[in-house]
Every structure is written in structure tokens, then in C-alpha cells.
Length: 165
Image 1 (cartoon, rainbow, N blue to C red):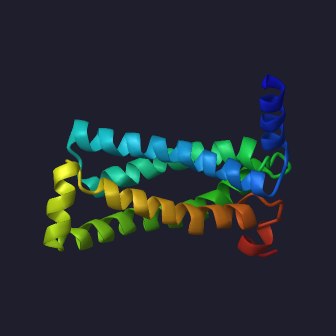
Image 2: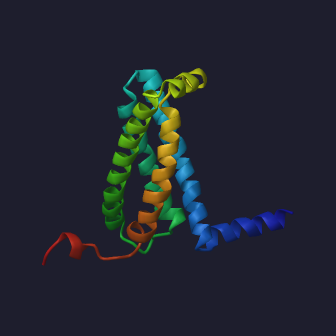
């Protein structure tokens, strides 16, 4: 049994394709935990408005995600760190904007529906958590993973896009 588990873990760490997707999802979930913990702690401990707390959570989760994806998920050691950082930052800004605005828009939309507001407020003291979860899943799959896989962790010379000779 132990040999089978070691073999499975080894395959998970080594192979591409579906395994890269699964590693990306694992990395994303760890970053999301950091994001949510920071967000909730900032709201609860410092009584900061949830939109700003969501931004801070996304910031912390994003830094963690970039490091894990570079070292483990995409194994981008062949890419220069400064180029990965630049490309990741461009994707990350879009992610933060989508997460922050999406959480705000979805939360406020749900608050305008009385029966939803009453039902969710019975189960959650911080109403914005439910929309934040939904928005972060959508942004994570349709924005972050796709752009990181295709653009960020590929060894491409981006100087030609940003600098003219």
C-alpha cells in the first residue's frame, strides 16, 4: 500500500497535462486559503471594509501562488524570474480587479434580493464570503489558470512586446 502511494505521489509530481492542472488547482486552493484567512482576519480584527480586505487577501494569496507555481506547479526554472514576475503581475492585476469588483458586484446584487439576504445572513455573519467563494473559483479557473499556463510560465522573450529596439 505504501509503495502504491509513493508511486502515485511521484507520478503527480512528475507528469504534465492533467497532473499540471491538478497541481495548479492544489496551489490555487492553498493560495485561496491564505486569501480567505487574511480577508476574514482583516475584517474581523481591524473592521476594515470587506472590499479592501478582499484586496489585501488577494494580494497575499497571489504572492504565495506565484512562488508555488514557479517552483512546483509549472516548474518554470527555465524562465527568468524577472520575466515571470512581470508577466505574473500583469495577469495578477487583472485577477485582483476581477476578484475585488466581482465580489463587490455579486455581494451587492445578492443583497438587493430580500429573501437571499435574509437566508444567507442566518448562516453567515459575513455575507460577502459566499459571493467571494463563487467569484474566486470562476476567476481562478477561467482567468488565472489559463493565462498562467499559456502566458506566464512559458519561456518567451517578452522584451519584444514591451521594449522597442
